[in-house]
Each structure stands twice: as C-alpha cells, then as structure tokens.
Length: 260
Image (cartoon, rainbow, N blue to C red):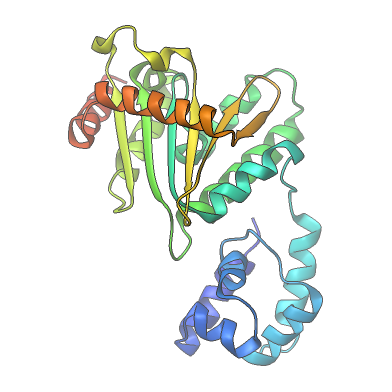
C-alpha cells in the first residue's frame, strides 16, 4: 500500500488544518481530499503540484503520486459499481453465511480465502489480498466512515486453520469496539432460516435510496431494481430477527477464540 495517504495526514496534522480547509485552499472538493487520504484516489499531476505548493513540500507529493500510480492495483471492472456504493453510502449492511466479510478479514485470513480457490497464481493472490486491505482502510478508516452492520452465520466463525482462525476471531471481536460498526452472529440454534440461501449486502445512500449487492463464483453485481432491493431488505430484517445482540455475539466470538 502506498504511504502517500499517511503522508497527507501527517502534513495536515503538522499544519493543523482539516480536509475541508485543504480542499478550500486548493479549490477542490473535500471528498477528493478524503479520497487521497484513504488511498481511493491518487492526485493527478496538476493537483499534486498544487498540494506541494500548499504544503511547501517541493515536488515530494508529485513524486509520491507518480510512484503510487505505478503500483496501484485497479479495481476489478465488475466490482467497481459496488465500490462506488461503498465510497458514498451512509450505511452498509453485510450478511455472510459462510465466510468472514471481506471488510473484516485479517490479511492472513484473506490470503487463505484467495489461495483456496486453486485458480490464482501466488502473485494474483498477493495482489487481491493487498487490494482487500486497501479497501478496508478506504471504507472503515476515512474521516466520516459509514454506519456498518455485519451479520454472520455462526458456521462462518468456525472455518479456517486454528492458527489463522484464532487471530481472525480476535480481530472480529476487537472490530466491534468501533462506534460505527456492529457485529451480530446468527447462532446454530436458529436452525433453518432464510439466510441459508446465501450472502448479500445492502447500501443506503445519503439521499435515502438503497441498492443491493450479490456475488457468485465468478463475479458480483449491484441490484437496483426496487422490487428486488425491497426483497433483500425484507430478507435482512428476517435474518436480523434471529441474530444475537452485539454483546452476546461478541461473547460467542470470544468463546470460540478460547476453543481454538
């Protein structure tokens, strides 16, 4: 991952200015500055030069931007529509029936998931893991992150080699300490429930609209047809009705940590 985002934050801290103030000074949108700091976007040459002039950093940002652009991992074409939703949604909801959601995966767990496909080279696995880590930072660590709710089937917590699964479960428990992030678990005792049909996600936009996301073995797609989105929302509500509250979910996760 490029160190350019961290450099931006340090420069802002040293000058004691907000993203909005930087944006106003160089006449760009505040969302663009946020995108630079979360590695979603790399400054174009003219913007990089303006930032260097503003911060008094010579050509440091320009050089770093060129290097970052060389090393940047492009978003898969089929995933771009959903990434745009993740970047702009006020609330994101994910249900996972079989795996830990990508936004909550540790690097080791993500590596194991991609390697298990058996169709990717070592370089492809490494690239996809790096992209997943960048995506996590871009969404969860931005200045104004979305309200995130995750529901996992208990069976998803039991997958993986013990040495990987234990660290993943600890990370999952710690993630639930974030003020804007909530993790629920559907216990095995729920039996057959609608979530057994498969995983999905929902994004609520600032204007109030909602879209869904479904993924199969090969790729994913955004669902925006109102009737289908409503169906996914109803399914979410049915799953949420049988999920444990956050505190009980965390207790269950920590119990599984002790069992590993």
